[in-house]
Image (cartoon, rainbow, N blue to C red):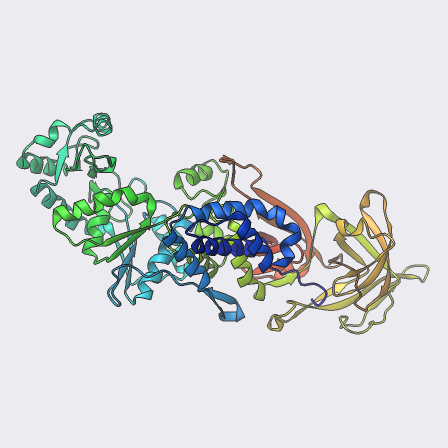
Length: 610
């Protein structure tokens, strides 16, 4: 399409620029970036932004505040990740960037072992993507091993569907674990370690009522169960497997009830859950908590670096205490910030009710941050990986704008996304062109003999021709398509309102002068003026002869001011050229001057981004 190439970098690219400049300014000035300095750098780097800089000040300010919450080391790490981006061409000529994570402390080449331990209680989301990408990247960086371990020790919440969803999401991301296992496969070993913990006075069985346990932990008071003999606790432990009922007995860690870290106030290590497990059925009724299973499993599996989001930071003391009491090897625990987007909750507690109430249509609803939803929306797995690595390894709280991911994705899909014309029905007028002859003009676009029909009076009624259009403005490998055009077109009303008496160009077709707009803005008349490309307003079009109706779903922010947004999924009804019905499901197209969209079903598309 020589007349118009609507692919261009926009907000997302600017956001990346602002973040990089803010990080550099902070590193150069003791960890504190300044809004005025970053603003000046933005203008110096992109002079074209000068006229609109006032509109960018809130974004610059928010970015500077985010960067200034990081430690200097975190700023350097994030800047290193962004600064070491190496542009290159991947498959299909798509430009990609590679980012370097900071070195792992105490890492030995060939001996690093990392793990990703998702619980199969929902579909994986963008937060899981961050964790698994970092885990795998570090394992590969040090030529070590990467373990995928399902933390499946709460049968009430877990379903076989979720195991499969996690595996499917990771395969889509291109994640390739060296070992795949389930915590539930090691139950007998976990029981053995629990018994050992009782034997060394590191744990005891508590039969207090749940409300009493909660009250005592809050006030830092130990219960009477603590003072019972080791033999009594061993007997109680045995009774947990066949006699006690749920909530009648739990195995608790012998911690410090006066600790300022409330995690250490004798937390639960095992509890009784009578519920069928998706893999183990009813074989087990005593199940470990994450605190116990994670520490013991990490040590048994040979994990050297346990990387997890910083929401677990207060639990590190318990993690190490359990291993120390058991005399087991200690992995090194490192934390990173949680990843989520503004208005797109990753918490299953918030997503599941939306699905149950029908407010979103399943885990792959394009408004959600799940991998299934991002995939359906048209976000590429390579874009997610690059996005995660571009953020660096930091504990600083951040909610990067979704537009940053969009900018990366746009760069990746632009080179191979088919360009198609589309006119929205809520911004549409029917344009009739007169003065067309049967000649082929300059032969530049018209590739078949035109057909001219005559009315009863012998006058010209309509003219049809087959027009060849390039599928991409620069990628010749995508070839061309043929469109049958007459003298009537759907065009955007917004382009015609102010064009009366003026010459415009129907993109990649010919030029016309708009002579009249009918009452009610339902139709307009124009006169053919030639084929030569001129410096006039360019208007996209859809031939009435070939028009088909399509629907585009437009995801918007799911939550606004922490409340569900009932307008979070827009629907655009439009006329498109008939080729839109021939697009393979799952492929990306760019509807000219509208946005990049993924074919979701016959005649149905989902907008990924501008």
